[in-house]
Length: 166
Image (tube, rainbow, N blue to C red):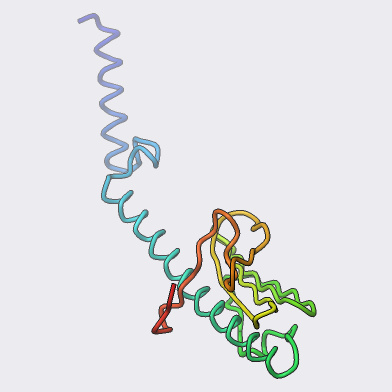
């Protein structure tokens, strides 16, 4: 081996040794992650999303039930506190009320998923539904006697309410 290559090899091994002693990462963070770290990170993200969904489902359920009750007693309310709804710090809320419907939107600050509920007066009574999906929802539609989520969105079920019927 020529003398230059020996010197380069010794310098390279010295640098690797020093990096080990100083505990410097030799690989960039995404490459240095083990599969366990990646799996754990994914599970934490899923758990966080499930917690937000559960919280949103409870708020949406309270909104739909509260607005149906309020309408029965004289009209929709534009105030969430009247319905007993308090918005948690991680969510942004928007409430729009007209004479024939009320729409409540929740948007988490850290997730792409949005939540929206609508209560609408129909010829057969007052109907409501809570939905989740990504992006801005189109309009809710009425099929028969049911209010249906916008296309691409999914109806939410409040886990604290028993006896949910499809």
